[in-house]
Image (tube, rainbow, N blue to C red; front, side, top):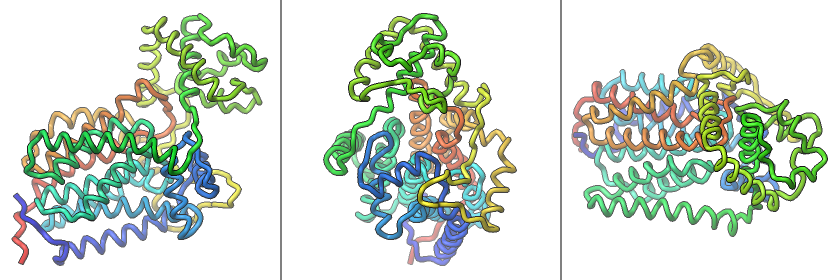
Length: 449
């Protein structure tokens, strides 16, 4: 078992220097940060301070704080780079006596499935990167069995909660990480006390999110569920031939079931919701439409449970890319969408090298969601083989986090065109495999003088 260590030895300083160099190169390669419509929308909210809940207000509010340093995406890119490379420092520092270990961590840091979204400013990447840093920080504490400083407890808690708040479906994946938090920061306590502390953190995080959205940033209520309701209603209508849409939708002269049938895609409703034909498929206030569509959705699912289950299962196969819908698959984002602020990518040698490494792996299995989900499930059965209790408890928590984060997608929107939705699973699985390597390379660490 490892003994309490310090950051001040020569190996730790070398690791720290290597991570600083990696972070600088990474920042230059991705400068000023890649942005799509979602990112640009949140940046706009960060400038005006007028937030809405279609995207997580906490990300836009954090961006507003970073704008005080420098307006634009570059500070948010720096935040993501710091999360990645600070986590790499903690990971690399757990084995201080093997250059092979540092090489393995370096290969992981520059792996195409890590780098492909590390420079993309989006909520999915920030959730994964903030959780990665928190987990590696807690891993360092658990492996060395050292007493954490109060600042470490606070920062790890903030990172975990931020990751939970930044994705609407992050809560299931957040739960196992809260139990890991209680295990690391309440060592030696009774299991019941640790579970109670984890429960308090989960409950406080959920309740405070609503307070933050409504009373701190005063964000406007949004209804992204409407798109899910319409997608499911359209699928049931097309599969069964029964009109399950609420009658009030027909008050809108542009509501056309024939148009829906022609444009329907089992993996997305975006081409109807944000169509290029000028057709406003829904007409009215979202707040008044919400209860009407929700009721129609509940009735349609209750009337056609087998159709709904099959439709969701088919959508999951498309999401995993086991089936191919024909939509273009973005295994990386390396551009900035047109915007009114004039943000453009900064082309340089490092960026071209960065892109070449990613695109060379574009057709490989590890750039597809099915690979990571299957690996996530398989690795859950192997965590007992980890002898080091620190590795074992962190691996188990992360693997359950990855699986629980994925499972609700059966019921949610199953967009199949972006890799970012599986980004956290890449970290979870890769890190577990690295722990197996660490056990075989590490040597006893001498007691600090």
